[in-house]
Image 1 (cartoon, rainbow, N blue to C red):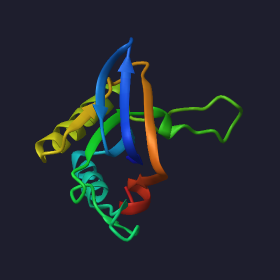
Image 2 (image 1 turned 120 degrees about the horizontal axis):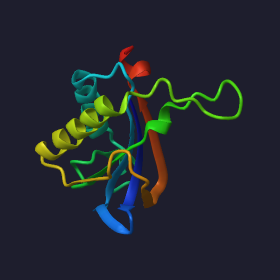
Image 3 (image 1 turned 45 degrees about the horizontal axis):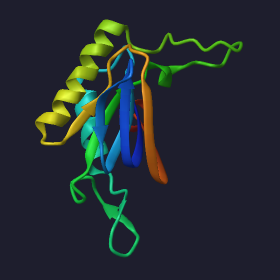
Image 4 (image 1 turned 180 degrees about the vertical axis):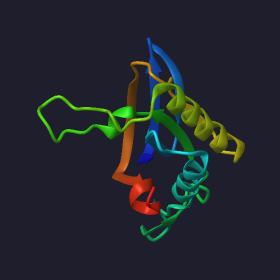
Length: 151
């Protein structure tokens, strides 16, 4: 599982001209799901993401978590995070989870974050989406479950 986390001032996602999710200050997260991912891995990734201290404190140091600033979440499915570009010029996506499983895992992540009390916006799995955001910093972190947990 991969999370690309961007600290944002605001972000939104539109599908067919309609805004499906919009947030103020918080994280816009692109989520890539591999075939081997599980709810246990998702839980670990969510906990790591929520504990990241990447918001500035009163001294300008990155000491505050999303909880500390009352931040919001915008979660976007992004299978292209598993692009394999080693051969040729056309990426392969063989490592991305099959759509049925990945859709359920994406829904699980959205529901988990919502149940933890976060204002959580979402995109639409498998849809052509237009994502716009103001990256605050810019500040972008990549979490990869294989690197972090060996899975």
